[in-house]
Length: 290
Image (cartoon, rainbow, N blue to C red):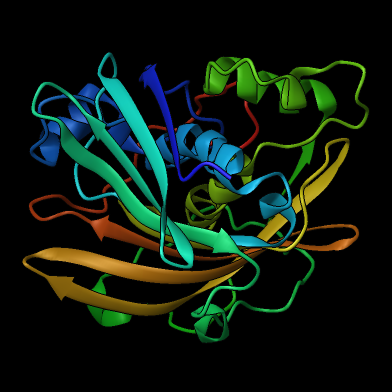
């Protein structure tokens, strides 16, 4: 097996969010957090990287593999993203650099089987969704609802939607996901990784938030034409240099059981911003992207 895999793409702007948008992916929202332009969603950076991870580890990684990646620097639309996946001992390193300064925008490791950190995750058991309140609450660092299962978020993903999120959201041409003769379609791992952000905005009011790390354990490759549900609970929250961080342990399921277990790290209130309610009412062709 080859020990190094490389790919290169040009990052595109995020599609409009379905549900409640994250202001950090707009020019105005990014400006309030001190960035020079709208940030490309970290899960889209991961979605592009995942194609190269599958090339290195094989499609079996989607059934029983793991990845732990960080997002140390922002990625902006129009920048070229270079993706390198190479063997590093018993695992594989995953690195994405972008821009004229070749800054690292994603850095992590991946491997087959179960991750060594899997036992640390504590996602809640699957549960039916509750009625969403008319007004969603917010919270500050002194009132974080720790270890309280969030109201699950369920989205029906059709084969057409699964193909569309690959061709339009990611701009990829992978026959594995776009072959109209495969029914139900395979669902790209990007969609599973993207469940935590809309789940939190399904439960709480936030201003700009910044995705900083994900740990994902695949249990089974997702297929379309069914409901896909996400549940989670906040397991940690803390201040670092004026940024408020939170850690969610989540579970993504369909009618057949677990698809992925996820630990999602995010800055839920960047330094100098507030949890003001974002503008509502935007819609998109893509089901529940962040």
